[in-house]
Length: 566
Image 1: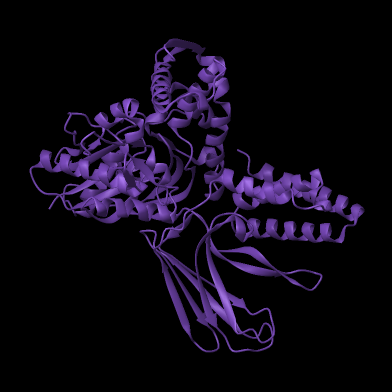
Image 2: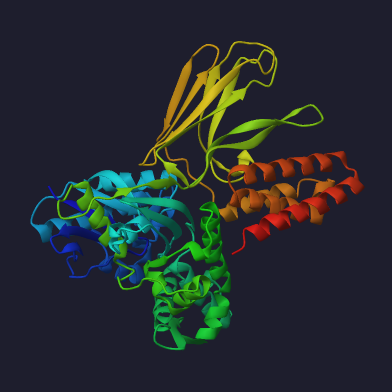
């Protein structure tokens, strides 16, 4: 039975299959390799997928949906007319269309697939992707990260010498950077980082914003149809920069044709902040992998947005070398997924390779910290499996009671990089009884186990009684964006009238929080300890001591920042 490879993209999706000539992309019913990830419903209530739906998105925006991959793993609802869909349900419709294209092309039924996911997809997003495949009638035993698929497509797994390479994957809606290392027949993911809310769509939105600003308009002035048309014209203008130094946008509004011209230099200046957002995950991945740019031997560009001259120029300047671009960036992930499907099917015509993956986010629990004043302060995050740990992995931490005659210990299960539990994602919890004894005399072992398919199991064992409780995290936890977390922190800070609201103090804490998220291991723990010490100094309200401590910590944080530069 054939196994297909599927690249489920934000903007376009593809399906592939292994042949004697290698992995090939299967064309859809229109003879095109790319199937737009767009769904629409016609007047008869029938579902339309792909290019047709993309066209209808301009004329019937209220009956169409796109870019839903960005909301995979959430409970966001899409209303298409009178019908309601979850993101994975819309994705399942796209996958089913790809499955039917493959069955028609191969002349046989298809029941199994390997589906690619962004390396930086969370546990919930990966599960939603797997569920989308299953809703489409496919068995999905394995997900493959997009950078790993791209590396396989370039044949890097067939090299004999050890090599380190970086995959720069900028798609329509997501950005991933992954560092992989090949040794013998093992391809190991060393580190991943990314931004699930950054992609080619954002570069298009810049042009939309500039157009509206030029004509003193806002999005509130546009109806759905006009908004969709303007976005399409902006997309065309963006692509024209591949051949021209200037671009034009023309859009009909209120029976009037509005036009806007922009130069490449002006566009580059307007997108500067997006390139800074691209740079940050690169820095984080290199730091987590303990590598410098000079250690990277090859760079692979993946995703349609890397076709933009501005993006390619940025990558060349950043890395000081040319990237691999001899495989179509739109198709490279699908080709790699087809090769992985062949590997899974034990095809004799392909060299075996062992693929490893990492946990993209830190997993841990909340603990209470004893303050010098003698009280316990809850709400501090204890990492148990840190991000970029090779999976499968199992780690255990021993935790103790903090109150006399404590009868229960509650363990919350969290995902994220923030120092405080309230700013991380709640996945679940376990409550376990312990014998009432003096504080610190009873303990539990908390074991986190994360497997290759992104399934997290948490087992709690009461040390003195041997009682065990466990939970497998299967439900969708939802998550907050960085912007939502920042807004939440900002709103809470306004409620406090305290020396810690001092501008310099807030700056130091904010910087420390960033460094805590950027680092792992001992460095992260040291930063957390420094922040706790500073918070205790603030509690004492000794202005001289606060100033002295602040100066010392600024110097330490400067040193940590300098070490992270490349």
